[in-house]
Length: 261
Image (cartoon, rainbow, N blue to C red):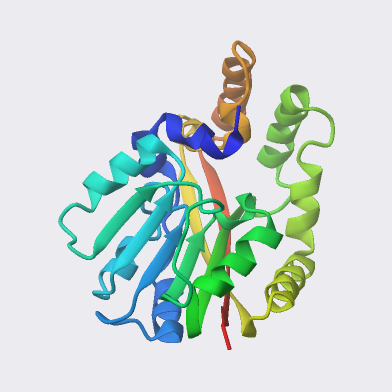
């Protein structure tokens, strides 16, 4: 299975459960990019539009590139009332795009699917001089990695995904400054200037069924074969039920913005 396309199976569930981004993030992007009805924007990997509407509301024309066929149709219908919205079912790596055309290219929790040596140079070429790139990711985490519920869920993950399956994510979340520094360095390596990183935080709370619905939209979870998938979800469900049927997820959203000279 191409994990990039695995999300496309259930657009409705994805749209319902995937987190939205905070208002402050969009305010910063809009201010940095100086968006208005005359500027042109490109969104890479719009999914079901988690990051799309605040940009549309500036009046700026938005062209969204989405790999999933179901997501494309769902999002086209979702934003059908916006005359400034257009979506193409295409692979950003392959679709021909005009150079020096866009004032903003943005991507929410999607740009990591594109090899950096393809993605960043292509964005650089299609941006106008002075145009902005804005890429951002949501990183969910427990309040503490020693949290009893997290430790119990970790055992379930190790049973079905293998020993140490959560260690890489934990290591990254325990030392986020290395991640921020690396991404800023990558952006600058491809010719962008004035690169910066901004952070935003939010908390979400779920009961067991809602949390299962959320993680059922994750690509590696979707890829699990049956009956392993059901057994895994049952293990996670039981763990949450053991803790008053409640789990809190602590999100950190890291935003990177830079300009083309």
